[in-house]
Length: 449
Image (cartoon, rainbow, N blue to C red; front, side, top):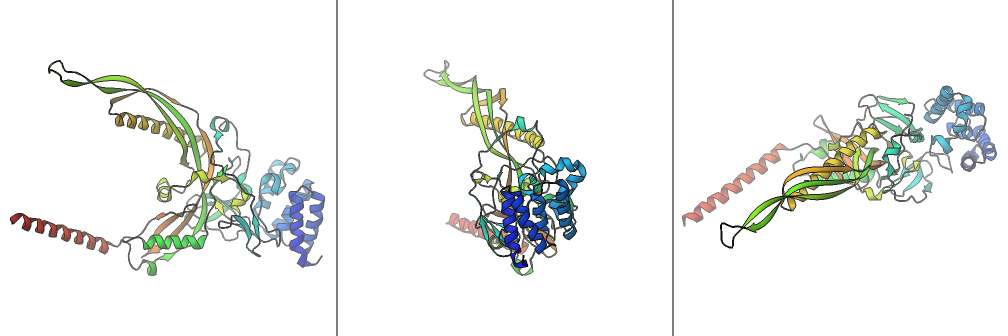
């Protein structure tokens, strides 16, 4: 076969592998590796099509010999070394089980990237767009918490790409297996180490995909800065923007129900025996019931982003969450959750409990009751989701100081830090004082007439 047929050979091999037609896949992929023997993608797919463990290992080692940083190949080889050849073989196919997939174009074999505007996988080499199958809304895909806490997470969703850890800020994120230049999306540090994917991760059940690209993100930041009156006039000239980075942030959401019984004093108008026809207020203790429902209570699962950072760009449209699919992470990074489901559940229960009590207190206050004694609180077992929310993170320097900016990747809301022009602040304060002084003088003159 001539080398010009490589893309078609690889595409046919991928389609056959996905369809489970291993003999057909091996035929096309064997020709593909002959056409381009140094292309690791072809060797990865040939490993997925092979059935014998030794053949699978040989293909993976060939992929590593041409690309030592190829994370899917490294992870699968490590599985062979840890579990033994006979145990690993059944879970090797890249597409079927491990999900250690590199999204490659079926036309030319180039790297694909999820396109937020088109909601499709677009080839970065030839521009071919592969439309995603319409995903359903997953806002109500709740799971039972009690069952989940008893079971280990069986899916290694992070193997969709690879996994890296920042030695500077500690963030752990996924990364495309074809990415060569790695920097932390949170602190922009180049101090990155690759590591074996964390085992027993709970996979996401829903995701809010990015809805706009980096060009629109820059414009939104520019418009946001222009709307700030108290920033320095020379910010656009002197502010040096650093690279914008897109990252999916992990969250746990909880739905719950609380029932409360409480006692409160209620005012009653009764006849006043000391005054003819008069009345007086008499307070009597009565029992009340309060029913509290919680929907999509968010608990941040990031170790790097703070609640304060998140609040700057909240809220997200949680009712628009889509069913999670690995394609959404094609060439996009996602932070691996650092707050476990068990720890998040403790925080979630506490918030649900406290919110219910505060709601009951507000109900009593609105009704004009006084005194508040809790009699009984019943918290029903909450349900949960693991979700990924999109965030653009940027930074710029102004007069040697670093400022961070966040952009909600779903709604476009911008928040962050800005320098303050204290000269403008002083002028406004002085102007306000002058206006107040003029008003006082005018009032004084008017009163003397």
